[in-house]
Amino acid sequence: MTDTDVARKPGLIFDTHLENFDRDVIEASHTLPILVDFWADWCPPCRALTPVLERVIAHHDGSIHMAKVEVDEGANMKLAGRYGLRGFPTVLLFVKGEIVGRFSSARPESWVKEFISEHTDLG
Image (cartoon, rainbow, N blue to C red):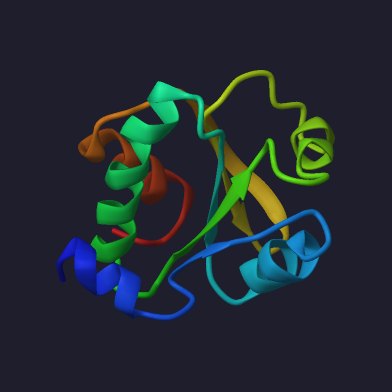
């Protein structure tokens, strides 16, 4: 699966906002893991991490989805406050409605794959 294929699969990677977060992430994570990328357009490490996360999501071919939260958009900074985020990018992994792991800053693809493997039953 290529990066372009990720964009063609509806729902695999999606934007969410404060108003829909509980439905899009918390409730959905009872069905499959949801990786949440808290990012900002002005943040170079955020822009560096995005393609890495997209490749990892593509690698798992639908067994994990990713929600993207633009922290500077609307009331989304309240979500960052809810989860005690201090810097961006910060990535949270939700499984069964709970945060099972988190990391901040840009990371290599192999590291992100290992992070997901450690916190889920995905290999």
